[in-house]
Length: 192
Picture 1 (cartoon, rainbow, N blue to C red):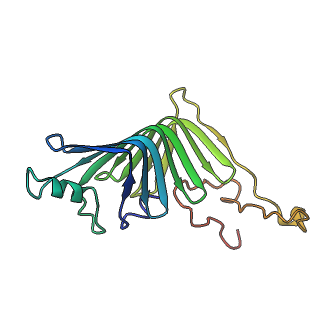
Picture 2: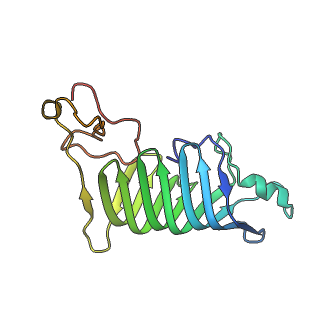
Picture 3: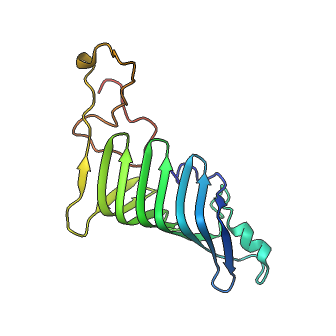
């Protein structure tokens, strides 16, 4: 979600903000809500680490650093979200205890009790690592076991006419094909 919205401004809403210019960090706390395009993140605290290359000692450039531009000239180095982190984009939600968004490496790592849901599909693990450049996602578990539940695609011949009027949810992919965790643009392909 964040990779698809990279050119959009980041809007942050929180109860309080503490700037630490010497540490080049800004801490938002109290029911933090971050919105970038169609991606929303909720957490208890969010620490934004930034580079302040403009003019040292001025707070105005530090605030500007919290608004990345579309050309990748963002001064934000890293975002660290803690406390009941929930990231939502369209029909996909990821929850965890802590999230680290490394802007330079273009990676997102969720830690602790990670739960990823997309439609009715569910993945559980201890870590979710997403490389936003390559689009490769990896779920890891401290116990060595990752849990997943994937719903079978509804068969058109079995569904016939839907008496209840409810629309069946689209299948995320054909059976046997990997579920793309960061592609929400409809993964059904014609003639598959």
